[in-house]
Length: 236
Image (cartoon, rainbow, N blue to C red; front, side, top):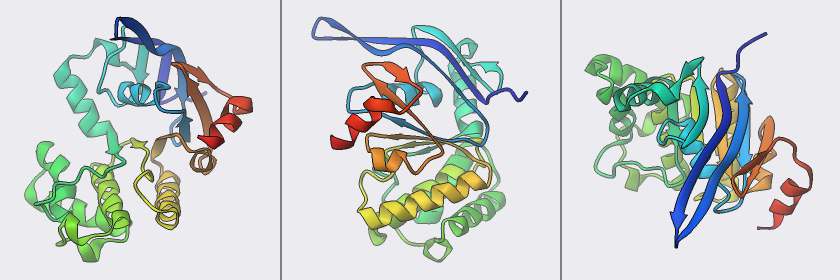
């Protein structure tokens, strides 16, 4: 039997808000197999972004265990976590997070620069990533010269340039129109077919249904099946 690439057991994360304790994650457990395309769906404030930050090694729980590729993330220091993020995880954000003064190619190259990849290899890998998302002919364009969908494609190219095992997509279609959203989702399906494990955070049931597996989160608790909770989320 294969070991899941992500094994999360009884994660707890709380915050103090206005004198009250908010349970952002309440004993959350989940396993994600290599090559899955998973949606985590929940309304605003449900804990889905907190969970994504945990999976992405951007935050630490108060208790519980997180194994990534069999390694205990909770025992790693900040430098080790930064290395994990750089080598194993690609991030895709709702608002693209592109640097406006850099070209599409330079934006894609940036994580590789931080990883110490040589200039020649950075360029080759970044151009290859732009080609995968259909934007190799826009490499010299600035973000302001690109449409929203094109900017998201650049952001996806940046996320895959380091050939990460896992792609974390936080509301990747949230700033896009419906036609462009379909195109971005199709691109993510193609990347999943190429072997990337994709975890997509969304509040939109229609988007979640495009993935291979859905889990829902509500008040910091994770639910493995769709059921009535997922159906109720279709209206917000």
